[in-house]
Length: 234
Ligand code: 0O2
Image 1 (cartoon, rainbow, N blue to C red):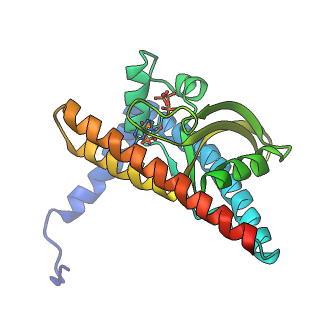
Image 2 (tube, protein in one colour):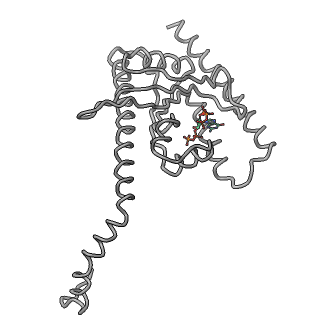
Image 3 (cartoon, rainbow, N blue to C red):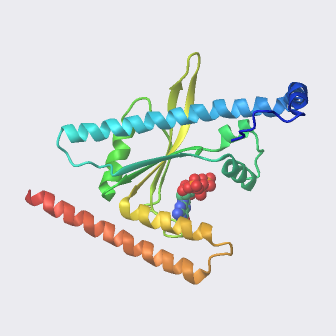
């Protein structure tokens, strides 16, 4: 903190010249401000869609607790895709990097990840969500039935949910990734390993990761069988 009670001589001068420079910059950059404002508005709508889904999942959680049922949801994680990641994805798909193009072509700007204890919970949560009349299924990719080449497993849904603003309604697409704790463990570590490596991941490492994914999938199935056995004798 400046404890000098006498201000330096040029402080007054600097202050009087500031507003005009600031005004000029505002005028020169008006496109930038318009775009920033538009981006903020768009992202607010995506964030609201995420909030609604989180509330729906929280209600299902609470209902299960009240009814004394086992909870099919372990954790819920959400994210909004970063502007850098949005631009990269559009460029990769050779699409224009504009707001219009982003909203029309990307279905994962808003993402919700639901982590479940067992494989059957994934489909139970999917069914509970899709039963709700304001949720519309747009696309489903079952990477549990048909895992990706890497060994990645999850159930991906793209859904549309309405967001009500003061004067408008927006149908917003959200990508929901449903996975078990074991699938999430693999996907998070594999993602981190891939992103930490600046060079191409060697084939031998890819094969190892695939093998680990298979082992994890087997463990997932075994844990579920144990749970079913216990349920049967309860
Ligand atoms: P982030 O940061 O997780 O959002 P597209 O979405 O159009 O690129 P595609 O094939 O239709 O392509 O999408 P896909 O594969 O159904 O879903 C993409 C998302 O699934 C990825 O998001 C990851 O979150 C996850 N995913 C897919 N394959 C793998 C994999 O091999 N390993 C891991 N760890 N995750 C995977 P983003 O956009 O890559 O990134």
